[in-house]
Structures are given as C-alpha cells and as structure tokens.
Figure 1 (cartoon, rainbow, N blue to C red):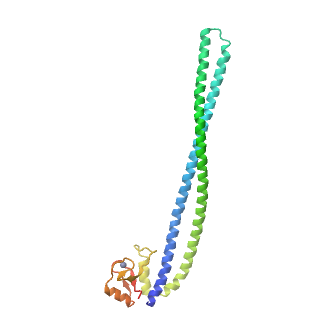
Figure 2: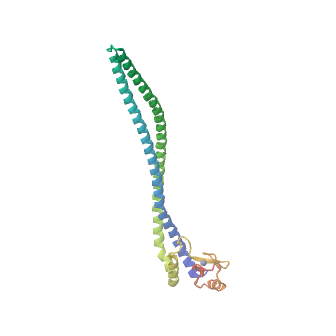
Figure 3: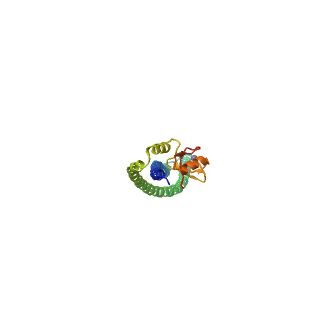
Length: 237
Ligand SMILES: [Zn+2]
C-alpha cells in the first residue's frame, strides 16, 4: 500500500471515531428529554390519582355534613311532636320525620358507594405512587449514566483532537486539503469513511463501478475520486 494511503487511513480512522463520539454527544440531550418526559408523565398520573382520592373524600365529607343536618332536623321534629295537640299537625310532623329518614337513607347509600370509590381510588393512587418511585429511580440512574457517558465522550474527543495534528502532518498537504473538503462537505456523513477502497471494481462508498482507468490509477497510488459519489479512492493492492 502506498505511503500516503496508509497515513490518510490512520487520520480517517481518528476522524470517524471523533464523528461517532460527536454524534453520540448530540443524541444524549434527546435521551435526557425523553427520560424527563417519561418521569413527568408518571408525576402527572400520580397527581391525577391523588386528586381523585381528594374528590371522593370531599364527597364523603359533604354527605356526612348533609346526614348530620338531616339528623338534626329529624330530632327537632321529634321533639316538637310531643308538644303537638292537633292531629293534622301531628301527621304533618310525622311525614317530615319520614322525609328526613328517607333523605338520610339516600345519603347513606351514596356514602357506601363513595366509600367503595374511595377504596378503589386509594388503590390506584398506591399503584401510581409506586410507579412514580420506580420512574424516579430509573430517571436518576439514567441521568447519572448519561452524565458519565457525556464526560467520557468529551474526554475521548479531547484525546483525539490532541492526536489529530500529528496524523494530519503525515499526509501530503494537497491530499489532506482534498480529504478535509470531502469530509466536511454538507452531504457527507462524517461517521462513515469518505476515503474508501475500490473493491471488485466498485467504489467502497456508493458501490457503483469505477472505470478501469480509475481502478488502474488507484493501483498506481494516484489520487482518484469516484465519478459517482466523489469519494476519495485507494487500492488495497
Ligand atoms: Zn462512489
């Protein structure tokens, strides 16, 4: 293999590694946002369950208040009946007592239903609470892992950046310029090589055939660009 090819391959290996680290670094905030979103969803679900419990508790308290008021009214009517001498008035008072009893009975039925609802709501709250704790644990672990990965990526990138000038100097300036232009081109994916070998007469990047002239030129160690995708070509022979 020609000397410049070997030097450029070493440089490219470093650049591709650095690009992969950069891509990983760029993806971390997305993962963090997803984790935050998941945790927020569990927080919201827990808050909604808590609200349901509070609402049912409020209903029960209201019913209790109503029942107490009705019981008071009933006692009031009962105490008055002993003083009533008139039959019609007496019957009317009894009717009112009966109405109080009926209303109390209706509220007590409602109370029983509300108690069942409360039990269900509390069970749901306990489940959501447990899920939230789990989500919190997961999120904390995730954030710690991502933070560590971020630091690791940055450290590796620093090492690669420090090493790059030495590898770049080993490549002929004209070739380096060409390679750098290719590598930083807008349509180039920097995590994939742009300096590729010719395999079975095809470009290693776009896999389209190269002419026999181009293949021959790579064999001679000449600088050849793929006609189809513009990749910089070399021969492994
Ligand atoms: Zn190509």
